[in-house]
Amino acid sequence: MNAEDELGETIVRAELTTKWLGRPYLYVPAIGSTNDRLKSWATDPAYPSGTVLLTDYQSAGRGRMDRRWEAPPGTSLLFSALFRPGWPARQGTWLTMLAGLAVVEAVERVTGMVAALKWPNDVVLPTDSEAGREWRKVCGLLLEATLDADGRLTSAVLGIGLNVNIPAGALPTAITPATSLLAAGGVSVPRRALLIALLETLEARYDAIHGGWSPAREWGECLVTLGQRVEVTAAGAAAPLAGLAEDIDEWGQLLVRDDAGRLHTVAAGDVTLRGR
Image 1: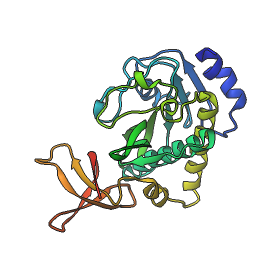
Image 2 (image 1 turned 30 degrees about the vertical axis):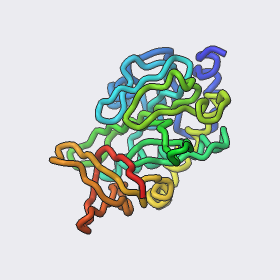
Image 3 (image 1 turned 180 degrees about the horizontal axis):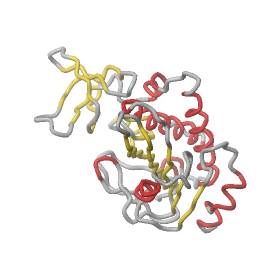
Image 4 (image 1 turned 180 degrees about the vertical axis):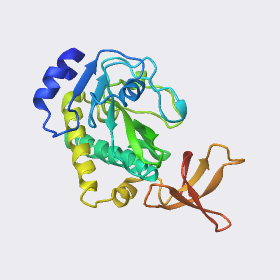
């Protein structure tokens, strides 16, 4: 099955049951970056909140901190969604929480595999070896937002890159070792079914926020980072922070207690797990 037949606009729109997410759903065979394209459309009212742009190949895909995100054509789910939440700026992290939880749920629903989250924005799968359990990255999330004069989110573009059917030998080299659903489970996964499950779950969780639900507790329960000794490298920091990752706050910031007993609140950074 070619990508157009599997992920093209006509067939996805016919099967999607969401009310607003993926309305519209747009497909392009190849693009530089879906995030960049949606950002350029963010001020155009022709593209409402819920617009989804998916591609089969990105030539300039990127993750957090402008790291390159690579995936061979025909193997992955590479898409961005446009939101216009009007939330306070600090609440923007909830979008990545929602997306992480949606990916975890969709993966389990479609494949039966149990995924987890690694702070701040990776979806990971377990790999057991003689050295113990290792967590490998299967999905990355990238949020890029625009604020108004009052510091509220006028638009937010959420990029999702999920390694679906990349063979083990074609996985990219990364700081967090990479995997794919194929490499982890040994069988090919239907990308359209996974995409639809993901969008339906993400919409339901986003709508729940308007009923007063916060994703922080459930997101924290999925984090493999908590309860682990970690080393955090934050932008601009003179040296890495080492300590125990104790908890997160309501906005997803990591609470790390160093060896001197001081508690640090970390808003962003690279985290390496160092064991218990």
